Length: 138
Image (cartoon, rainbow, N blue to C red; front, side, top):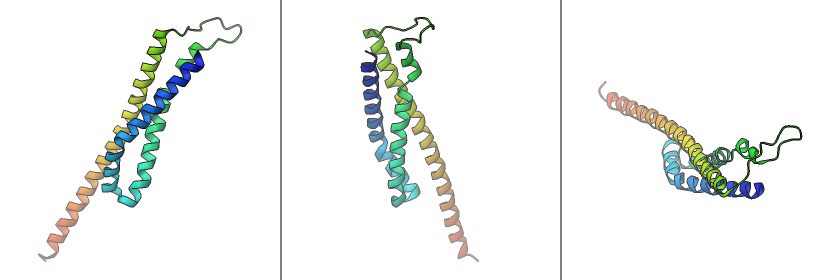
């Protein structure tokens, strides 16, 4: 029963992570294309896709939570929880929510860095245009 729960959680977490990464892919591609240029954007887009999937999987599969369903070592007592339908539903729901939460943190970090890069680029563009406008006045 434990192996079925682990497989179901892994399948749910992988599919959720890939779907979320595909959902954010067009926005990530546009942002990276604007800030880095298209030739670098393709490589970085793949990296961000990979980072979303890995963080979603690592956030959704909580091995310390699943260990409570395994039998304890000899002499350690018997604190093993039984897998019921309610526990299955709760574990799957927790895996789904934790996956989305991990992905949300990664995307928040990405968009904050992208916003900072955009502000820096705009400041450089404004300074460059001011310098070009002042060149003809001297």
